[in-house]
Length: 463
Image (cartoon, rainbow, N blue to C red; front, side, top):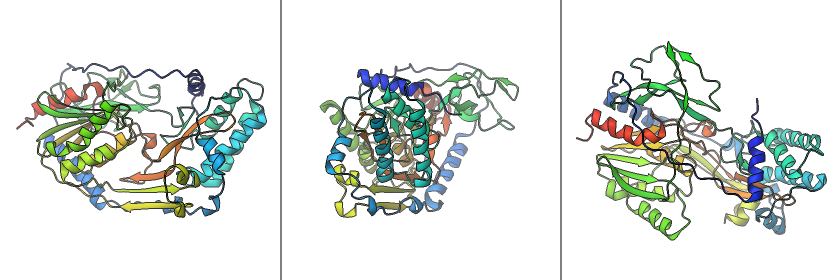
């Protein structure tokens, strides 16, 4: 069943009023205090993670997107330069206008997808999108006389695409097409032996004494579908808490004697933030030999992955090479404003390469949460190539299928549409935009850093 469209209407109202969304409120680090469960052997756990990752990087099947990246030179002259300028120029949204103009915007929307969207063929091409267009037209016409033309158009487009276009970046008026999944957990309940309990609900975690054990964690849209009991346990599901971004983009510190790097955003709005990112890119070599490192990308929504790429090169002596296949669609609009070569217009640039496993003695702990997305997820994928790395927290946000995102504005209504021109798969051919990337150790995100410190103490990892 499709979710309600109320968030879309609220998003439109907020945009029209030019009211910025409030920043998430930081939550204090918390330490649970229940009775601990029996410990899992740390080195056996780490060895299993290492071997699973190494096999994906070195032995994984080649990734192939050729079925979804055909040439499209017949589309090279779809828009005039003036029309492209209108599509790329932000303007005030218009609430009420004739139905014919809303229908024009609807036609242009689907033309944009056909000529520019990176996942157009992946999600079914003309066969699917012509049906979605017919559904959107019907929705628009059925809503005639029921209020704002702008809201009716946005709702028609949103309702037609939702459930088919599973793209974590794609938004209509700021509302994401992929319904968000949140992580829930059962506080203060730890399980020594998970045998016979569903892996959908029981995950490895860090107990109150620092031992690796098991607890109840699950993903859900609102928690209503989670079981009340399982294996004799009464389950009081609680929504995992957010972690605030703070007032910085990159910071270095120590947490209980462990060197800690915090990357909250990979883009700068001020000279101070630019200086922080420059420091980020240049300091990797200083951490090359540390025996323990915490790398914190909780609440990092993305930006440019260049800063981390440079850091990784300094840290390991080589650039990261995850197992991946990516493509960039050289569309007419892309060539107009993304500096793609005009002679390549109507083609794809596709790169497929095996991964490269990086051996490293020291231990790295990557902290993630549901707001870790896009370039923040690139950090996870790159660190997946490094031996002795454990991811701690909850699933990432799931924004990696379609890169090279930008905003278009429909010419009559000014309705903003955000989508990408690329296509990419990492590690496997599974679309992770519905669920993100899972951690190795599931921990309520605000407790993740303290939990890692507890674990290092419990297992004597400080040396």
